[in-house]
Image 1 (cartoon, helix red, strand yellow):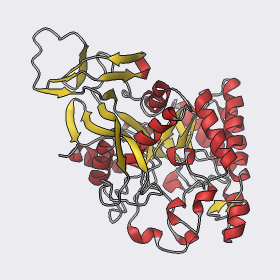
Image 2 (image 1 turned 120 degrees about the horizontal axis):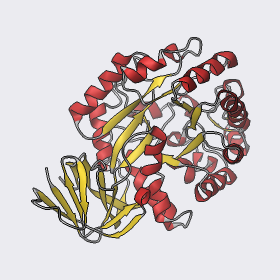
Image 3 (image 1 turned 90 degrees about the vertical axis):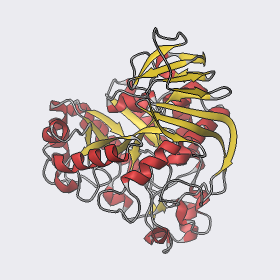
Length: 427
């Protein structure tokens, strides 16, 4: 398939491109910018006049619910929703059922995603067997035979620090990135809201900020000792960002992502036990939200993720602490990121880098850029179109989002995966 995308504003942060350019795609790659290649005959011409053309989004943290929880969602349904949101690459955690601690499970997920054909899915292998924190997994086998691109213990605690150290050393030996959820299991103590005035007023068990910051401090010491390359997932507190900024200054090989919802919502949004705001880690204070935004502006925070966790309706109907945590967030990732540029948190190019080239760099994959020879993963969107997040029009099987009723600006019109159209608005 040969495609000519004409008249759009091409923004490719990785290559420093921002201007009106024509893009030529063939054989799944970008073959030219502006100048038509010799003998090029387009099978499809996409008129992108008044629209932005950017690399397909790369999402560092999404749960697709398959295998194991197909009653909530499937790989097909959620990759279709991803395409509607301009996302062409999704990274899934190892806490599926069965857990990704054998190559066969990873291969199954890759196979199902190729069958669906809407987005590329990359997998994280389990750091420990069954994510139980007791025995190291066969990490090298997961990478070599299962095609995993990094390892993680997902949300499961590693309480035995010696096992944790050995796991990081083992990962470092194979030059693997370890994705870390920084949480002290004992300090969080089954809490479901940020520990503070709001949780006290609502009578909800709280998760103190120290549950994250203590874990970050421990993790940084182990990273320094083992030399492993590490990525901190969906951090939520300003103090955590400050600690990692210092570690980066000391040249520790660490990166950070933050979930998009943490940049807009706080503990105040729990309101009268709004279960749509039950997330892990919990929504924190206005000061923390401001600190996260400042971390993005300064470049300390490398990426923004959706932290997508689709649920069936019943999962959010119990009393607040008994509901299942998580937000359905694939289709709001792009507009929430664009709003950060609109609100002058960072430039548009820097904002787009946080959901394209930077997450691709963290994953160590080809993606998030549109230079000649790069993968033809493309998102085209109208930056002026306004739309309302509506229960009935979300493509994801999960409708559990606190952004229902919010007006968003910026709507995807086309998504291309390896040069093939996988989404077109109103079709």
